[in-house]
Length: 388
Image (cartoon, rainbow, N blue to C red; front, side, top):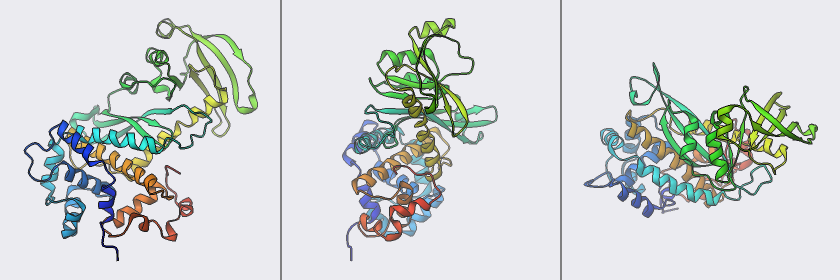
């Protein structure tokens, strides 16, 4: 009989707790706190994510039902919904945001050799945002429309392994293109964006930082062709042009030449026009790079399906951000566990197994060793999947 730690305790042991305490000390999270410290708070929020808890009362009831076993997973204080609600309201969300960045850096290393789908050694990022609708009467600080509130998760995702390297949470009114001002471009990297980020002044800043971008042109786009390159139309590429902008303000903001590629997507029967500052890659590779941007859409759908970020345990801005950052940290923790233990199952299957076995005392590998959990069974699951 296995007499060691519970699966949840083993999972928590994968976290760099010393660095977590550095984040806590930075924002004085445990200052004058005698019970329910930040480490316990994080464990409770991670438990809520992994077991799909729906409310504070739900969390309290489940933890109390565990009795003395709660102590063995690192929760030394009794968890009440009032105490948890107060902590979510008052404890600085930046503690968990900074800790999530530490996990991001660790996961980025583990997934650095993941296949990209394009023969390219450079780092490729997809930039996009997703909107989470909120009730106006409960979340007035996140005003979006006259009768609606919402927040946005602006995300820069490394397409090697679907790791979100940059996340910025704003209210719904902030336009996507303003997030480009917050990025620190990496020379030689590729930034894949949709038309919402088409701002020539900001794109020129990316160009001056020696980073590459791929985006789509708008329908009213004005330009003058300098010359055209030969194309192989059987690949779907209809034209490959070097152009300059002709409209007054765009031409001032982006004074150099751009590359314009028109591509016909046979699957969707749609014509797409791409703009990029890269003149070396084949035109069909540029089209494939933009197609890989769909991975970030899958990421957004996946976290909305499998993490608790659509309904919140508190209504204040701090409580919402605490929940989102701890959810993303939990996502990264499971992704790190998948690599550390060399698990073949999809992230969806791993979360399902964890949700019903957190308090079991068995080695983590044993929980995923049953025949019905083999990777090939995941193919029958009609769910969005990552890391496959």
